[in-house]
Length: 402
Ligand code: HEM
Image 1 (tube, helix red, strand yellow):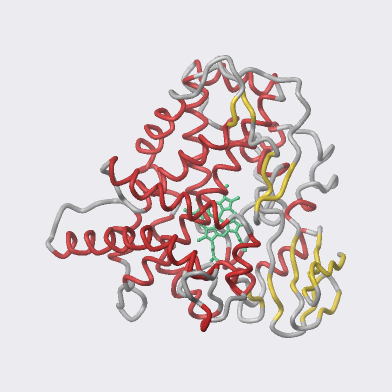
Image 2 (cartoon, rainbow, N blue to C red):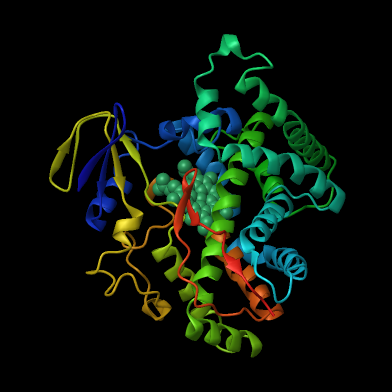
């Protein structure tokens, strides 16, 4: 356990101990806030975003959002995800190196627009994707977001960063609201039932029987887009970066793919688990103490941020012998302990899209392995660099395919 003062007055206590991770992640959510730390995203996500709320308000949004993301439901989305991936892979250059992250971002964005937002018409997907992409690119510049945070409400004029962000958001917002209204009208008119996540959320009711408002739906759709798009694209890029540097892993995957996965996807799933262990997209989960609390025997004052380090827990040699080695076999026939493998955080704030992301990764990787032969490389591992809150490959996962 150690303390970092990351900026003046912002103290983070990190721990590499899974027992502390359990104490923190399963602790009393009324004393361990997570939403406050994401306040920088408020201009983009809006005040009702599940990422930004704490306490009972967080719980209400989370309960409304959870059922559509249940693991079993994901199968319904497999065909759409596979078609989107196949279309992207078909455009990859052959025999020349290219950056795979761009393609992975295109896939994960389209998956969210079709499967979460339920937009099917290609022209509409393209019209929505363009302003959202621009918005997301702006959002990965923390400096820009910080500027927004410090712009007071009185100075929110067109020339301020806030004004620029608002202008940039206007077309995306208008389209998202249009989509919500059109879908609501369709539902009220007794139209055909759809299985996309927005349609399910329109039918969701809280404990008092109250549906979500258009504003709530807009904020949660933006949240799912932001939380689910870049993260999954990065995890996919890391998986491809890792397997092209391990010819024996690649060989096994290619031959299982060629044979049509005769023994199921256990090995592919182990490859994904091992990638998320060694290259977790998010390096730590953070909770801000609302009162003095004790973790791992240390008494910490209110106001401190306590952060189980995903990165360090995943590299503990006691849990993972030869922790730096990329060895998917570790996870064959063995599930990691709940707080020993935490790329999706845990407890009441655990990633809502974890099943969605793991399912999507499996489907996309199967499409890639079926469509092309990846060239193994002897290039050194790509460096880990920070992009906003994520850890991504420095060269975006550079690949060559045949
Ligand atoms: C490999 C891909 C992904 C990774 C590594 C990832 C990781 C995380 C992490 C570490 C958290 C914080 C958990 C905590 O504080 O305990 C989180 C929260 C969240 N994630 Fe993900 N995520 C991924 C994909 C997705 C997807 C696909 C979606 C939705 C479509 C999504 C939606 C969310 C939401 C809504 C939250 C906030 C939950 C809450 O505060 O209650 N994520 N994610």
